[in-house]
Image 1 (cartoon, rainbow, N blue to C red):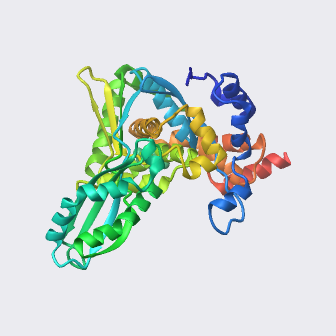
Image 2 (image 1 turned 45 degrees about the vertical axis):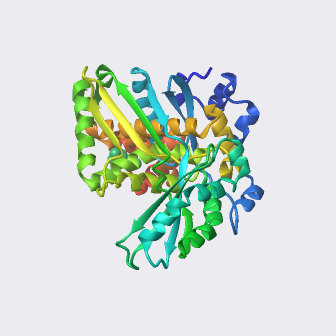
Image 3 (image 1 turned 30 degrees about the horizontal axis):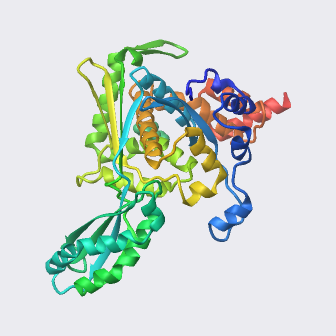
Length: 434
Ligand code: MEV
């Protein structure tokens, strides 16, 4: 059974962290190998996209303390930004005190769209399609026997009339398709291709585009957590003073910060970006299509006609902080890069997930934790303080520091409160000559 609380993980060396995961039985040394090597060979990459000349690496860290639906999980996160993994881990620890994250998903239903043009009468065509619903679904259902064997296939047909388009009225057919544990783009696109001639025959129109929609609002993931108010209290030490933050103050600060995002699209974009810091990092680690997840998230955030926060923060009757997040989550654990990329496979194995739904539940929980990490920092000490030392390390590396000089140069910049490449270069020069 996984224990996601590993004390001192942060202070271990890379080798010690790997050994810790292997010793605790989370991954075998072979499973860990893709993380050590970066996972993907140039040959494998050459088969994935066009004109390959090499590989591009990103850091992979493990977020600790996560408990999702009562189960501990170690969460792999691929991201270049400092503070994200630490922020998620810290918030997961606070959430743990309130029972961790409860997360659910809807059925894995994707939407395939067909645009039907050149119709004499859109309303007549709409009804004709609905009258042939069963035939159309039967045809779409026969497209992918493997998916059908696993319980997937065509589920529903919706027909929308678009009146206010620049080219006049047309129809949009939505094929609702259960893709089970796949991300589903290929299955849905193939099914739409197959249905197009039938749709043309029934309507007398012309099917133009046939492609899935990334606004996967029939494939949602929802997470909630309750943070006991006393867990939120902390004191912040600076050189000149100690500031005390009571649990109530932090809780109310987080709710006020959320209210800003709920009512202002300029703030909502940044707020949701904070959620996506967590979401994307796990999506990338598992070889899923993060552009699809991004597109779905932001379109969903604008579904009322006004772009707003994807999450909600408030308090319960006992005064504890309560957070919820609902968003489309079209991720898979079969097919695509998830199967081709050895590090993605190892990431899925580390989380011990056997269905796409379990993966989606973890990802939406990480999104909620990440959101809380950002709001807590912004509503109390400000984001820069936490960011400063990690950012300083990156600046030190960019200035050419290596080995133990990275920490030394970064530390000096933090003390001086000047984290700039020119200063890092100067300090590095001084340290090298002294
Ligand atoms: C930075 O990557 C993310 C934040 O800007 C999110 C937010 O403002 O809520 C800190």
